[in-house]
Length: 371
Ligand SMILES: [Fe+2]
Ligand SMILES: [Fe+2]
Image 1: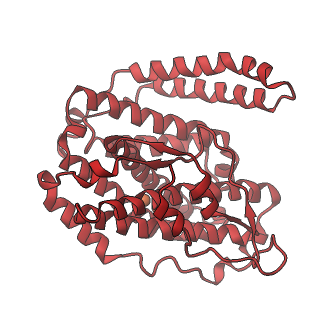
Image 2: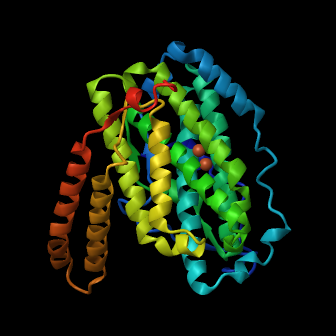
Image 3: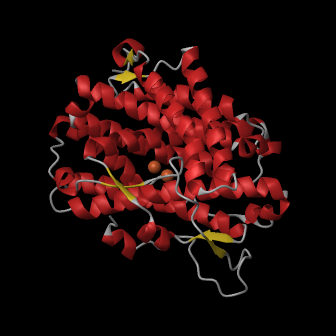
């Protein structure tokens, strides 16, 4: 489903028309969106009526306080490009350039996906749930800025994502509101830890700062942190989303799905992290441990990421994924390809089931002071 309002207003800072020969920084070529796979960012839609009818009273004061923070718009003047960007793209060697553009594209797509969802939510619930609508409008503002800023960097490489095309043509995944809460909460908090980990690393190793966009990550990640706090407060306003047996199962499922997807994807793109002087596995491990710890503030259970078997199983997913990519690349008929891939899909299913069944950690035990 395509949210109609989103289609009508996808012009972000950073979108501009090509006038000169395309494929240059002044006239970027429109890049075809990357092929959809289980690892590419998703676009979401939800039950807007249920969202509009949501009773916020159990945690209204906290939500009001968060909205007040959003109103302050701390990063209003942050996303302004400076002279450091001039000629920066030309300094990258072809291989680094390739992996960096992929990173920009993936980040831009996921920021834009947040923008579309928040904007549509804000529009649809405005009448019946003004406080929630206002929070979503502020978050849509932030995500539009983030996506626009990334798209401008893509333009430095002579490319640009056609966000209008993406809006109209990407498949939208429908999630009930509580699943939207789990998925977006995790993507905001993991986004915070991802950006801050890169920022802190590059602070210590300025020689690895391959592009000036990383200078903006510190304030940027504070936006993501506030967005995550908003969903934390929203789940506490709907306590059944984070209470009871079913909620515990779903939280485990979402934590695992988000961590496993990120790990497999990042290890497959380890060249990008190497270009920054980072080891993809070490970086992901740190981000997963931090996000897991943060999630214990609101989720009733978190994963046992200190257990070595957790990482052994993630590595098996990585190997299966490599085999799947190799099968994909082979020059054979589609049915044969599918047949060759079958055992690796099955093996992935089995590993995911084993990961899911690993004993979780009750959050009260994990972080009693916070809760
Ligand atoms: Fe963002
Ligand atoms: Fe965000």
